[in-house]
Image (cartoon, rainbow, N blue to C red; front, side):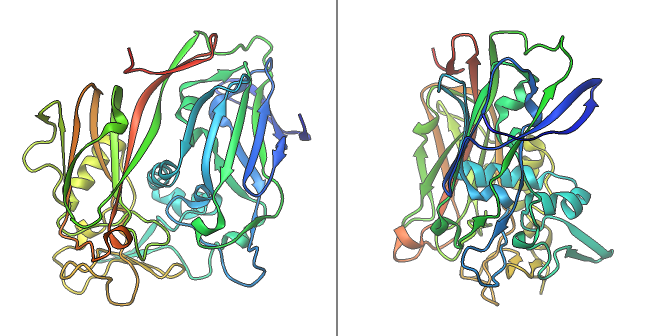
Length: 411
């Protein structure tokens, strides 16, 4: 195991002393890197992070590098933690990375979004200023915080991505961490690392500190699915991806198909969602059928989010286009609800329109989703149709003695 320059820092939190060690990856390439933490020395599970790296534009021109709502996490196609025998314990992949990290970054306080979080995580600006009682503007300034100009100060919080680490306190049985990066074509630009990222691990200095007591640990992992709306803007479908699982929250968002290279969660005119479980309707009345109700469900079940569903504040107000991001050329406003086309100015509307429904039950036989909007899908449905992304918090359990992982809903 290769390590960095030794002890980066020594300190304490919660009455415990620790030593931070920087570990170099065992293997590193433009598509994948692997870290291995050997067993026997306890470390704090919630403080694993990847740091001390930066990005440069691989093309070599002066183009700036800006990310979507998931920030620097959008570079990752999959992150997983395995036990030392090779069994995968928890992972986050595909739309789960962009979707869940987008939601979690939006839940930071406005002050943290403006100062620390914007530079460390490099997400597109999520903070606002209120110059007056009647005015709201983004804190984003043109050419500010270009990722290629941040030096080697970028930061990835692994514990915020993998909920198994949040369920643990101290780990002493070792771990293997595998990070896979997205292809350049999926991001829309090329990049390279200025130097290989390092894994920061906080090892316990207390000789009496042992690993968490108990052989089995429960946690929630993210299972993602997506549905392509090819020709019709509305559908009703049974969701087979979550069969025989225990679901807590079900997140959803529409990322469109065309003219949305950053894959932002979009607001659609007349959007409506309903869920039926074993023939029983879960949501009352007409389900989630408005921006205001969608925002209320998200805040109630997932926590308050910054600047989400901006359209719910400006709908019905004449000549209001919403917030504007000068670095991405995006207006944080709805699509034109008259004909469903791109708003004036050529920028696709993006209000970070996430939805969330609390289920808290096992899915035995039938989970049916009804979704629709007034958005025309276009003649070439496969190319122009919308894409509905579903992210489910699924309960899982890991036994560190046997090395077995199981879904809680399984018999």
